[in-house]
Image (cartoon, rainbow, N blue to C red):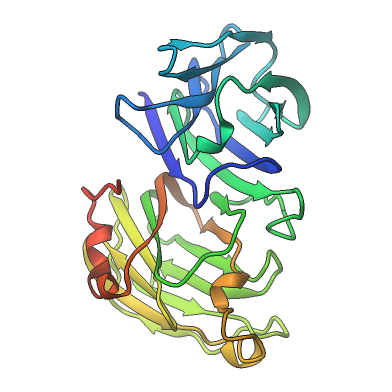
Length: 327
């Protein structure tokens, strides 16, 4: 069965940015394709400065690009190489330079691919084909400075999504997730401060307890008092769309069209009151990471980021409807 994962980026790709994509395949997988696109999923104005087509059976990678000024694919580069590691995983590391993409596969240099169109139009990653799941779509900055400052690799992670710049107030994150596995499992989404171990928001739905537990850490990395929410919306073997709104003083969560909870910023006294008025908790966030525990399995198939007007935040839950797609 053909799988599809779409990740909208928080900002456009720029020189000094990297895209890190990691996934798992199944034993019968044959091919998959990764496209770095402009912000058009299905339109005739679609352009991709880079396409990576992987033929697992033939052990071949084909690199190409497309822009509709010439209405044809640019010159292909073909490489014969073992694509998949022993644990049925793959990892592409794509560094954007001024004249080319520098690409590594499974921690080894693969090639340089010359820009045939402006890499700065890239705002969307589309992955299609025969694969089990995508565990990582990190968009990071490494030049002229690193963001996130700490760029960690976590083998047990279910999904990672680093961003190369700050969030802002009234940013919305949309996640489409499907769950399977153990009915006593749980998962959590964490937002860390500047890539450190300090969690500014820990969102932990627990299937066994049918509750959502939220928490955050202080400057000493100590957990504060838990906040529990009994309105548990999740079931196994179903798909859900989560909407996370970064409000003026709360994280607000909606699922499949319904507001579920809002969680206050509990770390402001130790961190934010010393900052200037032009800074907020959002300057400290570096993306999010999702972990699955106790036999739960999850697959993320859609990610989006965008800002809304302050008045629209009152109706933010509409963005969590399963049929909602941003433009």
